[in-house]
Amino acid sequence: MNYPKLSLLSILLIPALVFAHGPARQKALVTMEVHASPTEVWAIVSDFCSIAEWNSKVETCSASQGSEKGSIRTIEYDTGEKVTEKLFKNDAENMKMLYAMEQLEKGRIIKGLPIATLSTTITITPADDGASSLVQMKGAFYRAFPGPTPPEDQTDAAAIAAVTSLYETGLEGIKAAAGGK
Amino acid sequence: MSVIKAAISFLVFSWACILQAQPYAYITNQGSDSVSVIDTQTNKVIKTIPVGSKPAGVVVSNDSKRVYISNPESHDVSVIDTESLSVIKTVNVGGGPLAIAISPDDKSVYVADWYEDNVYIIDAETLTVKTKINVGDSPSGLATDPHASFLYVANRDDNTVMIINLIDNTIVSTIEVGRAPFGITIDSERKELYSANVQSGDVSVIDLQKQKTIKHIKVGDFPYAVEVDKKNNRLFVTNQRSNSVSVIDRNIMKSINQIEVGEYPEGINLHPDQTRLYVANWFDNLISVIDINTLKVVDEIETEDGCRAYGEFISNH
Image (cartoon, rainbow over all chains, first blue to last red):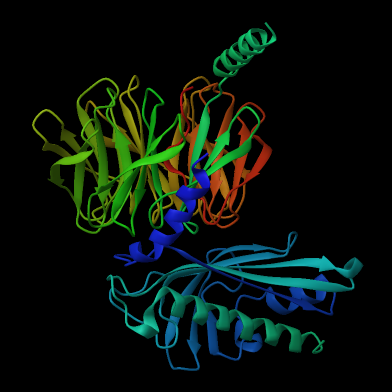
């Protein structure tokens, strides 16, 4: 009977309790409809280094073993920052790709991307009877700043905003590569 | 007369309810600061309990009367009474409490602080911290021994498992395992301990008599937690980045299958009826229920945001 009262009380108390000592894992999720068949969209993204073509924030990419599982790519962002990412899944049948950033050097903060251990899943599913596709990018990551009081540009919210923006830019690029619709 | 009749039938009904009470699963939802309570008979969420900030770890007492939840960002432990399904106390422990375990007699609760590298011992009667033990770098997994006064601690950033003697709270052994051990699980009869090693993608098997690692078993990507199925002599391991559960046959100490589940599977528990596994998929806010005989997902239950259920999350009754 006192459940509603208790939950209201807890909601009031929660803001006072948030003084994060250490980061919790965060999520980002962006989905876009692209007016091309899933097969066409998969052809755009399935090469592990195609990211340099469809994400304008990425300048260059080279991969150790092409698009094979386990391949490691080095990408350079437009900020000049370089990171390496490993391909965990490249599943043509289910049109799903999963890659993750390799562990960063301790204390490193990537300019414009204040995160650590980002893993990204790209999934393509048919929409509109297969004439069109839903392209989804999902990310799981921690903010890079380890301590309790991150500077304003390195908070959980800043990390979520940066990953979301990275994905939005990528999805816009995939859409443009598929004919712009 | 009719009042008495009604009262009697109410009593009979209440007793029937109590007798039919099924184990509950207590799922920590890290993104929404709550615990989802699942009735495992119906596989429905019957209540959502607000707890501290970013809850992750969970342990149900052996008598099923209490549930302890670790809250890394409010630096405390929420104590839930399973009869009222509400928080009866919040115990401040400091640092970043994550892994949580309980003694076989339910008198002590152990909490690993992975920022300050301590294990706190909470007195379950007074609900205060009575002892603090300094352990290795970033302790992330805990296990207690039902047959001995030992506590096992996985130190993620040291790649070790420590054995602590709980009589005098001293470290008696430090054992090398794979890279970045996270969840650990004991099989006390077999005198083995298993650690899921996130970075090396394997499970270390520790012989507790020899106090050394005797085998590394390859599993999927970013393994997180291990569960033992004694009846079928198997281990089940959640693989965060493979979105799967590896099945290890202990007769050959090899992975024989991978079961597809949701994204970022973390906590995994065998139901007390020993027929199904409950797996928390962090990204999907979803519990997968796996039939351990057919190795197929037979049910899915929605939770709130970011379910982790890291620990022993199903009550015995």
